[in-house]
Length: 158
Image 1 (cartoon, one colour):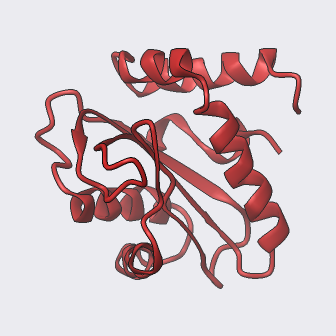
Image 2: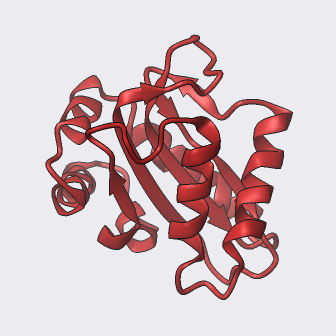
């Protein structure tokens, strides 16, 4: 499964000014709203689940990247949303630096293996400093989505 199969242009938020999502809580709420759209699940419930996961351990993996994720019974398939916040958001990341690329993933509880594969794909995508830089320079959600499409088209891993 490709990331572009679970991420859509309308589930990408580019906050170049830093006015939309200035805190970790605001990012989780934004991701929940994006992920809830068309899923049949309640945004407040998704936000709560993401926040509960963050209480266990921050999903800020370093290099400006965070991957908040959870599994929800109401979801029938994996779904992703992306927030790009070039100004950075305190995320209690492993390296102590703010998160600028926050990639949220929610999937059905019964699909744990698939969920882990998606998280690995997100991690591989964002491993490259060049990819991170280009995403943060994206003028809008369409450009960010195109960058991810291009990366997947040239990636050796399907």
